[in-house]
Image 1: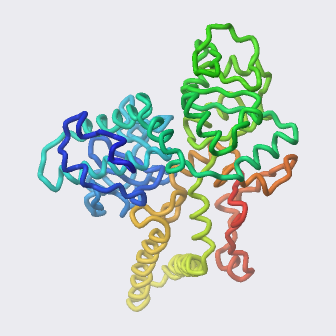
Image 2: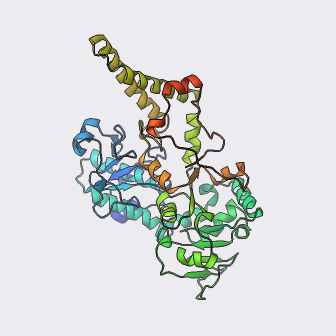
Image 3: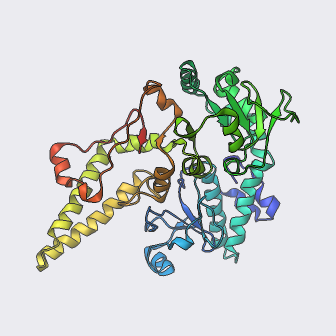
Length: 435
């Protein structure tokens, strides 16, 4: 099952029930950044401090009651040793897997649908086996070229043409910026896709093009040399002494790339859409500046700037402030009012979540804390935006200065923000954030 039911022959390869194909793919079911408990078959949203957001734990397509979640985890906190590993994977004893990229959306939905089918039909199964089978199916779609062939056969169906992509690349090139492309996709797929998105002369905009790089291994494995790919897609055996403009190279490694180009440190700004595979190693080990492309920013910022959302958030924060200040009153009448406020606050938090995704809420926030996704994004990305075309709003020599992030004891009172009228959502047009 996927957006194209013929794309992932999941049931036939692993002999799962054919009825699973009857489930339609719902692209709005999940959001990126969710965690999956491999052994309990639970999909959930976790905040920056490892706390589960109650009301966002799903077994199959059904939400798990808060009481059951608390009983399973002895509360709502997930210990560090159970969390996903550095790259978001479930390995070395970690029981959680974090889904981070766009491809994870159908993977999470497929897992949930199969879990739902087994549960509804009272079929006994091992959740760890199901997780591995789905993971292997998604992997095979990439490795065996199934996805690439399907997209190439109907490129207009799967890839959106965006003339702003061409505009931003041309603008950077015209101002003398050196640009390079490092992708895990094969050369034929990259060539057809870039011709459709950018134009037939797309190679002229890039100084270096590397395909099938096998990120994140590309950033860590020093053993693989570059290979040149000719116009017919044939791999050549020449030793690479220089990375030439207009040529396509396969594999290689970052250490050789640095040696051949001399592009090092904070003078390099590297953009990617996968926080772990694209950005983590570059910012931690090599000191590159990193930019994350987060398409969800566009819709979330649009929601955050609606009058209804602003009014809801204003009252929710005001109500929280009232609870904090009035809790000292212990008489029965005051306690009754406080309980009513608590109930209203809980209902409003659910309303706030539903502004974004009715199952899991915002990609960036739980009820009051940043999500684990945002924690990792803030750690590994110097700047993030909805699209590379956001850079068209700025001069190529523009400097993004980091804003002073207020500490908890430096935050002004919410009432002060209301009185001064400072409650505004920034970057409606640019949809861009820096740290």
